[in-house]
Length: 348
Ligand code: CP3
Image (tube, rainbow, N blue to C red; front, top):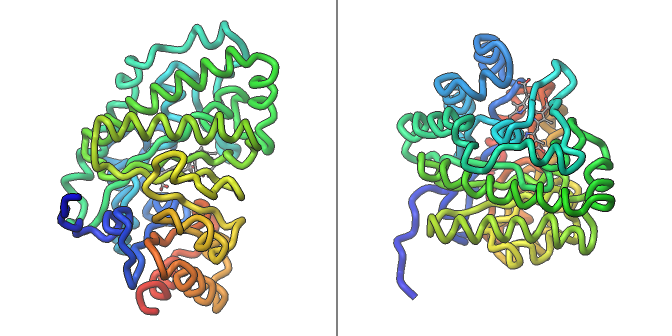
C-alpha cells in the first residue's frame, strides 16, 4: 500500500473514507427555484433548457448557492435528460408540468436514435460550463458532475414523461426485452462518454442519479440498477483512476445493502425513506454515505429541522459522511432554513 497524501477538500476526504468531526455538506437541487437569484437568471435565459445550454448562465446558477451558503460542493447545473436529447430524442419542458420527450417504444424508435459518438455535439456547452466553474470556484469547493443512471433515463425516454410507477418502462422490458436491453446498452455507453468528458473538463467527482431504482425489485434491480452502475464505474475508473463516484439508487431500501461493494461506488447516497440509524448500521459499514434529511424540513423549518439535522449528523458520526437531503430541495423551501441546517451541522 502506498501512502497517498490525504486530499485537502472536505468532500474528497469523506469520499476517501475519512470520518470528519463536522461532515461536509451540499444539497441536491441547491441551484433551484427556491432562490430568488436563480429565478432571476432563469428569467434571463428564457427557459430551463436554454439555461442548461448557456455556459455562462449555467455556471452562474451553479455558483449562486456557493456564494450564499459556502457549501462544500458545487454540482454542475444541467439535467439528467440532456443525454436523451443528445441521443436524438426530442425534449421540452412544459411549464409547470415537467419534462416531455418523444418516446421509444420499439425497434424503429431505437434505430432513429444517434450513435454514442454524436452526443458531444449537443453536450459540449455542458463541458464548457464545467471548465468555467473549474476556474471560478473557491479552492475548497469540490465540483461534482453527474448523469442519470440508465434505468432512470430510460423510464423517461420510454414514457415520454415522468410517471408515478414507471409503468411504460416495466411494460417494455417485459414485452420487448431486446429493444429495452438495447436502449440500456446505448445509455451505458453514452453515460460513460458523457461523464468522461465532464471529468476531462474538470469535474472532480461524478454522481449517478438513479431516481427510480426503487421500482426495480429482485433480479430486475440486480440487472438494471446494480449492473449498469457497476459497468459505468468500472469504465470511468479505468480511464480516470482516482475519480470518486457517488451512486444514488433512490428508494432502493434493502437494495442499499452491499450496493457500494457490488458496484465499486465510493459513496452511496441515501434517500429519506430509510432512517439514518439503519443506514449507518447497514450501508456505512462499507464506506462513505451521503444523506439523508427529509427535504420537507426546508419548507417547515423550526426546532424539528435543527433536531433532525443533529440526529442525522450523530447517527453517521462513526464513519465517513457527506450531509445532504434525501432528495432535491423543492421550490417552496425557505432559503433561511438552508442556513439553519448548515448552522446545525457546523455549529453542533
Ligand atoms: O442538483 C442540482 O442543483 C444540479 C442540477 C440538476 C437539475 N436536475 C436541475 C433542474 C440535477 C442534478 C437534476 C437531476 C434530475 N433531473 C433528476 C434526478 C434527481 C431527482 O430529482 O430525482 C431527474 C429525475 C430530473 C428530471 C427533471 N428535471 C424533472 C422531473 C424536472 C421537473 C421537476 C421540477 O422540479 O420542476 C426537471 C427540471 C429541473 N431540473 C429543474 C432544475 C433546477 C427545475 C426547472 C425550472 O427551473 O423550471
